[in-house]
Image (cartoon, rainbow, N blue to C red; front, side, top):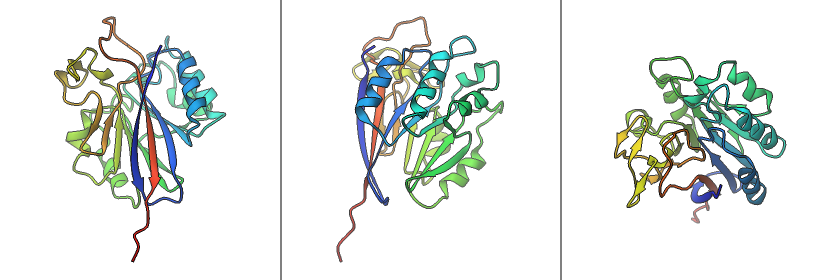
Length: 236
């Protein structure tokens, strides 16, 4: 599996430069190319934006990746819809492997607020927890939100003061022609958000695995490299 790594740079009022690797939609894909990229990039932390597993029968690779990564990097996991397909206690399995679970919760890491806005399905809810989201948006300092569903962006996130949101779920639109995806779950045909940077603060990752029988076309697996640079102080 040849992975494209796409780099984005942002600036924040933090003590030092920080680099993250963002991974989404593994769906049982092989770990070796991911591990090779992590060892090459040597990030300050790893962010996983949901669908670490596919279901109760396709989950070993995702959990193994957590176990490896947590021994080398801080790793932060938010929940996608496929975590809902796991028959057991997926939250306990994630924590047991040394990852920090962000389940409608946040942590402060190196001066940054990192939050995870869980898929409503993984929480057994009928709608996302927008009360938690509003509280997260009102925190002081630079905020990074892991949100599996890009379709949540316009409805719940766009008008909030969140500095950076990173999503997956759309699988790049499955087939890509002229730089546009053809279909995405939750957005339907000719979806708006399948890849790239939007509004200067919303990134959609094409993901790694392919949960569909239909092959991807013009749509290589992708990992995102996020560089958060220390804001230069203005001279008086």
